[in-house]
Image (cartoon, rainbow, N blue to C red):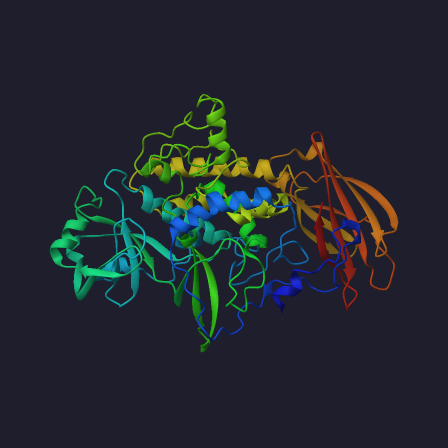
Length: 550
């Protein structure tokens, strides 16, 4: 049974930053936080002021950081095992169980979708953004936001949006029910009061059939005249606008951790880099004021990631932005290097290109990918504050995705060319491997600790992912009691595959058995340690009560 505790409790499991002074409660770790306290008053709606967002993050933010005294703190929102519990921000999926490829292909979609329920009724043009799109309801009355591909770049944005949606859903983020559907213009009917809206959602005119036809003429059609449509089911609740990248919503009583300090936000970096999810404007992080299905009078805020159409290199394609992933839109370091060298510095972009395939962006490759140097379109506060422990958390979730899982996500993009599916799958697998190799070499990559009857077991993720040889690896296990007094050390060899276990670890004989085991991994080119805290439960059984990575 999962334990539910208050959010603040898991952010203060240790009272000291000194590793050997850290102690954990002798209790099962929290797997879920209760951040769904009733929010009876709808929080403030944050308008999509992208220009202000750009200025704050490109100019004000870097200036403030430059003039501030550096202060690093480890991430909050983690439990005693250094994991992220379920919350309104994140739900553990592949991190705690295997997903089938069929589950990943389906993702968050919970029905048969709108393709089987025609005609669709068009109610308005898409509010916000600049791409062609409409608000529609299908024959069931289910509401969707739909958009289309640019004829110059068929299948690129719609495919990327769905592929990335599936992979981020698999690792645990809350996403919309997005899918690719095909229909004809004759499957669309106009509502009598259909309107045209501006980028702020204000009504600026009436939408008639001629204007609808004219707009659809700018969308890509298949050779047989069908429209390829990206359909995103409306999220439950009322939209509050974008999630602020830093600070908190003061009018949300459940928002108790500054967003830049959250592990589930910081740890997005290796995933976003892997997927080249570059478009991190605030409006692509959506807060929804949601009614509890079990009690419609009870409300709380759920946090979503939305709109991935510029991922997988697509921004570089549609916006002709070859620096994608290598520099911010306004990049002080890049600008300085260009000024000092009169533009002749050896920039890293423009040297590797993808094959010319439908739906593939030319800049989306594995050869040019550097997992530790990737940059989004804009600076993002959680990434500025992230450390190698946050990166390790994100990377190890990615590691759980098999090539078959990744291919299943790509197939959800419904690409017309099998070569596109093969290329995107192979490239994502290669970028995944590069990401794991980078971050698993910066933290002792031990995980999934268990203990039973004095047998301590753990996985070495560098070995299980075949990034390090087992024959070159050994572990030193140094035991201490709850007072930090040394009790002895053993050395064991790594298991050839699967978990490494030992019955020889030295345990405390105190009433609780509180034991701290410092496990140091030693390889030819790496050495690093992790502290594992063990104790006896009420029934006398041994259990892991805490993990502290060094």
